[in-house]
Amino acid sequence: MATKLNLCETAEEGYLVYECNRKCSCNIACPNRVLQKGVRVKLEVFKTGNKVIISTFCCILEWCPLTLLMLIFRAGEPILSGTFVSEYFGEILGEQEANKRLTRYGRDGCNYMFNVGSQINDMSLLIEGQARYFIDASKYGNISRFINHSCSPNLVNHQVLVDSMDCHRAHIGLYASQDISVGEELTFDYRYELLPGQGYPCQYGASTCRGRLY
Image (cartoon, rainbow, N blue to C red):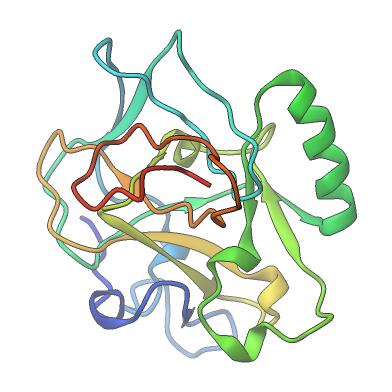
């Protein structure tokens, strides 16, 4: 059974979510233990031949165009708004190591680096000089790597604190921002920074499309 988190129906994307943990007196059945239970909805990776999908989870202007495989990530069952869908899983890196890997991944033409700082919406966490951190799912990721960008997404992400109140150890949870139908592609907004110049065109085609990824 899917777990529904009412908070995520009203909380703006990027704010912290606090779950019960081992210091609480409750057990795993507690309704405030959501992300830690893992994926509870049916999901599918689908191969399509009618459009080019940029399958990446990068927030630092590097990507992996899957022009041969053309995979999308879609719902295998109806998903209600506020439902936890998946955690974005990978290695936690500091900015220096992340930049080293990005240089190497740029040569290889593929990476799945998630810039956590670009998704934070709690201004108290954006302290000047505070170390930035990244999640690299290139080698130790999960199925969330197949989720594509959209300027009109049906998923939002939240930092979820479980056993530690250290935001640098937060989990990244993806939640439905609306009711999702069977077979509907799952997407979220990568929140690229729009840089001067032409940038890179967005291929998703939503009515609210910004026209480019960055």
